[in-house]
Image (tube, rainbow, N blue to C red):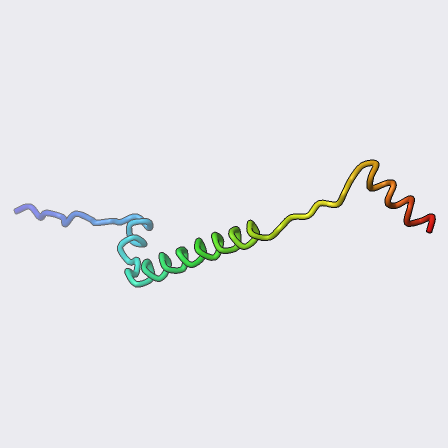
Length: 71
């Protein structure tokens, strides 16, 4: 009479994590990522709508400074 050993079933740590993943948490994470992306797009859109003003440079700027110091 021979005894048959039961095969040892070993799972990797990754496999255990994948199997134990909470389904609700995945949905909440997807929602949070969506909110982060929307906030990023809204921020970029807000800054793109603001006017950008550059100071005058060159000789004209230097003449204005010289004129204001002589007065």
